[in-house]
Length: 317
Ligand SMILES: Nc1ncnc2c1ncn2[C@@H]1O[C@H](COP(=O)(O)OP(=O)(O)OP(=O)(O)O)[C@@H](O)[C@H]1O
Ligand SMILES: [Mg+2]
Image 1 (cartoon, rainbow, N blue to C red):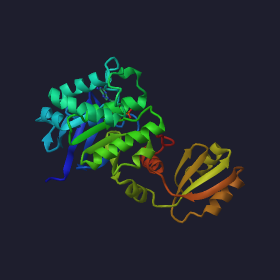
Image 2: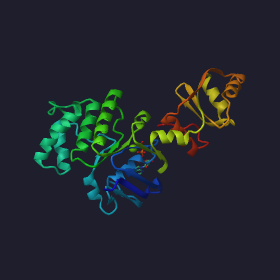
Image 3: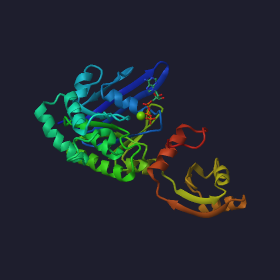
Image 4: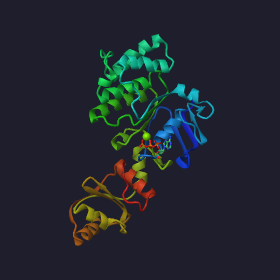
């Protein structure tokens, strides 16, 4: 049994003169939860649409469940489930009608749809509410129902494009429980998110920037590979004064604002006491300075800063 669910080979996608994907190559193993991360416009949705057989690449190829998106996009569509960035459900249909609609789209028989109805209603927490209008459901319930509809035909691979945008933390946690259930059953899940706490739940992460793959690994690997030196959290006033003082110093590998704190990615051999003294001697009061364990957000910002050197601080969104 091949262990590879998806392989892309040097995929480029241009819209006119604009290059949205620039030679993307990657491999996704079966059964993993694979997170695609990147700022707005990085090319995540474009890549997902190509992998779903909805867009054709300008050059390169991708194999989804062993099938080429160039030569056989219709076969690709049968093997995957897709939950798009915008809600895919019909708000003016009931829960049952949406399930029946998606079952029909994926070619299920009436008997199969009836069987799936119970499974999806249970999974979405909508048992007994099958006749409710979808538009009346909370964001969290709609999302669970949309996921149920995306996997109604039991695909081996499911693409979730920002499925948790705009729902509360409890609903997001419940949604992740469903994702973990799918993964436990052997389904390969490819998910995009801007919530970096969610990215921690992925087995593998690929960070995209300007249509390119700039880093890949497990959350743990990314932290140890890309932040090798000590990371300091600094609480100081005035904050922005501290930021501009620390920028471009010998001991600064990277510096970013995190809320009302600074995160300083130091260079080897930097002495925290010297840094603290430098700030205080220049009129910045240091309330607290301590070494911290990097989060994915630190890794992400540091990598994006590296790519956009000179363009200011890295931004998450
Ligand atoms: N049909 C299109 N025509 C022209 N440009 C497009 C088209 N689709 C996408 N783009 C451009 O390609 C780039 C990548 O877009 P894409 O939607 O893949 O980004 P994304 O990483 O999903 O961003 P977001 O996080 O905002 O969803 C953007 O600059 C976008 O404007
Ligand atoms: Mg997108």
